[in-house]
Image 1 (cartoon, rainbow, N blue to C red):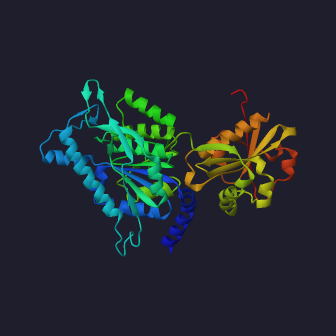
Image 2: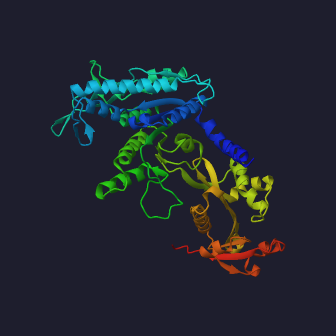
Image 3: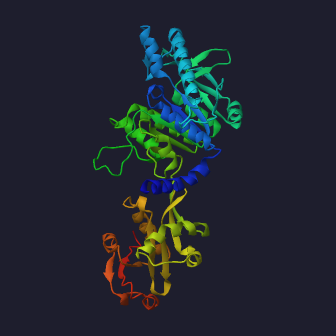
Length: 450
């Protein structure tokens, strides 16, 4: 029964994402290493689930290990410069063979419909085509990259038409030129350019390794945070150039792709460890995610509450009211007093709130109804809400803030409050004091100069 209850709770929490993602375009980059993994079939099952939920999917695959294998089998040397493979005429033939075979294998897996499997009754249609116009990488610092190329143009209308017909679009890392030449591209380049051209909702890369930030870890090893803005990505890359980076080359390369994508109309870029079972589902359908999400601007904001926030605020405070931590407020009262509230919003979800009640004649304000979602406690969100309330108090010309609490006495003491008597409060508040709750009174003097 506990498992069922957990499932119901998770399914309900995923509902907003299911609604939000329907009809949106996701571009997913798949490395050649991932295709060779024995667990790749489970990823295909997850792709099937996304398609059944109405997500419009574009899959871009690489095939570098498959190409390397073919070259080694035929005793060809792999040449590279500046971290980029050089594709000569001979190696291009092996690249075409390896990429073509990989492409067909993925198509075959997407076409499976075995009974008693997640693909049962699946009706995924796969569309491929000459969606990518390429050009040569060129001669750089005296090095001719020959048939190694880069994306010149994406046939957006052709991809859109395929998506409109309900197809999953599968794109390889080969591109064609207007003169009929074929170029070997990188999966990262193709996925980034396709996502940018389509103005995709999400660009998702499944990495071989990803050391993301873990709040439960006690070590001091630098790691990739769960969320980054484009500006923060740039700082990481700049620091990696100055020092021996703790982030591997794969992550650094994809951070550059994320910057490009987010600056070219892609809403979010996600970096996810492919070795985690159900990684793409855990990243997309849980609020906290398991990878790193990059966006153009910060997803967090503290703002004034409005009437549409009442339902979300009630969800936050009702459990605390039941425990007796907060004074019970009706929906009607909350609607009347909504202008007193500020909320902490994270990726369109309200995860914290607080209320400020000024007593102008006494030059003092009351902090009330400070609450943070259980999943986000101990992460500093309460501190930031308190800081916002203090700044709001000062902006209104007051220099003292008080709070009545029954459970959080130590937290307020740690944040500069000291215990005072009921007589130190405004007369109006004294008259409203609930002697049954026996709340303790704490006050903080605010430094308006700093």
